[in-house]
Amino acid sequence: MNGAEFTAPSVEYSLILPLLVVFGAAVVGVLVEAFAPRRLRLPVQIALSLTALLTAFVVTVLVGLNLEERGDGRARGAITLEGAIAVDGPSIFLWGLVLLLSSASVLLFAERRLEGGVTAFAGQAAALPGTDAEREASSKGLEQTEVFPLMLFAVGGMMLFLASNDLLTLFVALEILSLPLYLLCGLARRRRLLSQEAALKYFMLGAFSSGFFVYGIALVYGYAGSMNFADISTAISGRIGGDALLLGGIALISVGLLFKVGAAPFHAWTPDVYQGAPTAVTAFMAACTKVAAFGALLRLFYVAFGGARVDWEPMIWIVAILTMVVGSVLALTQTDVKRMLAYSSIAHAGFILVGFVGAQQLGDLGPGQLSSLEAVMFYLVTYGFMTLGAFAVVTVVRDSGGEATDLSRWAGLGKESPMVAGVFAVFLLGMAGIPLTSGFIGKWAVFSSALSAGAWPLVVVGVLMSAVAAFFYIRVIVLMYFSDPVGEGPSVATPSVLTTIVIAVGFAATVALGIVPGPVLDLAAAAGEFIR
Amino acid sequence: MDVTPFIALSAILFTIGCVGVLTRRNAIVVFMSVELQLNATNLALVTFARMHGNLDGQVAAFFVMVVAAAEVVVGLAIIMTIFRTRRSASVDDASLLKY
Image (cartoon, rainbow over all chains, first blue to last red; front, side, top):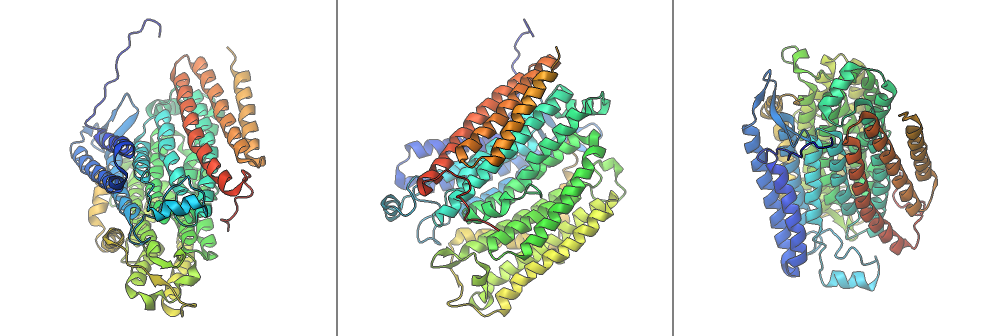
């Protein structure tokens, strides 16, 4: 190293342009906070975030169209920034998905009609609940517009996370996506104690899990002598001994990643945080974080740890079974609709993990079989839009205390508002995996990819747990249509056009992908493999 | 150079941090335990960097420090908010959300 000349790394800016757009807009958002007059901040932030995310989406599509083929033609793309970021088919696909879902989340963040002219975020987060300062903030109609830059940073972190090609970038990206989310969870306008508690729990457990994650990185680095995925893969295929370091490292890194996807036994934070956080944030978190975390999980395990598959596969089996059982069974006992959706998202994480064990190399596939990457990516599309839509519906069912999240308040919703109840029923049927909804095709994709890898016991558990899950989804539908309302009954507030768009998009995606899944499946297939 | 003592020390520190998170009640102390875990990681990273004779681990240690600092900012903000609202920083008191 001594005397070696410093050479500046080569950066293909054109490939990472989507990331630059999002991070750039986030920084501009911070400047807007500092310099724009208060009245203008909210409209400027909304416009800025939405423009940035949609621009980044367009740029992502353009980058995706120009990816170069590599080697055998199964993978396209390039590794840039000295091996730190891999821009390949799956990255582009998942970037596009994250950007679409987060643009929709911006609309939910910006909704103001439901709270009577203010957003669902605390007017002044520093004002204590129940004090004069808080009342003054709300009577003045103050807004905590920092939520938009925070959200953009989180989106940038997610995009970086799923494209990271070395362990250090993976760790930094994990923190970039997590830290803003911890804060966003604590910013609800109503039920602030719950919201702050959710932030505390999410932060404490998140920091704990990232402690494990980074220690795992240190161990894998000790084993391989490099942070780069390709070098780790080479070291593993050499198997020069020191297995304890490698296995310990894989286990600890998995703790961090499985925590982020909300898989059992690392799921305990999910229901609390999903319930306490403002519903718009929950929707964003549930949809986008899962996409990013699964993208990173797949890349890490296939590209870096692919050679140690026999070692980690049993772990994924156990975690997948546990996650499906815990998610589906505990969802049965829930009385709060946000908690129920949280457990349902845990169950979905389990179903996606089932797809994880499918054949990883396209070369291993028979004709007509789905690679697990395709199956998981398709499932993430269906899951993302359903979840976003379902949480958007939760924001419009209200009573005098804000959102009526207790399930007993949802009784008789079908009579009060057939439209909202009908849309929510479609989302629930989609999550249950009933044919003609996207959820069915998603489940079929992950199960068939697991079957083609011979993992039939997992599929059996998966199908059984889908049946259990279907029971509680249908229980809610029965409650909405065939129960009489208790007391005054639920009321459905009329949202502004923003929330309506999100619900409509979620609904359209759920139905359309159930009837004509072909184009999206083809797109997932065209994404090809991870580049190595 | 025999790296085993250094790795053993870092593992011990990591375990102390882990036990601290699981047993302590005060949010600040829990958070300090997490920081101990991160510092244990730093020790392991620089040891391995020395063992392999490259700089990756040392560079990573700097990143871990920076991330730890960022985590402190966010974490203390959240703990402060909870403390001002509840007049208590005990993680056991924040128990409205359950089951």
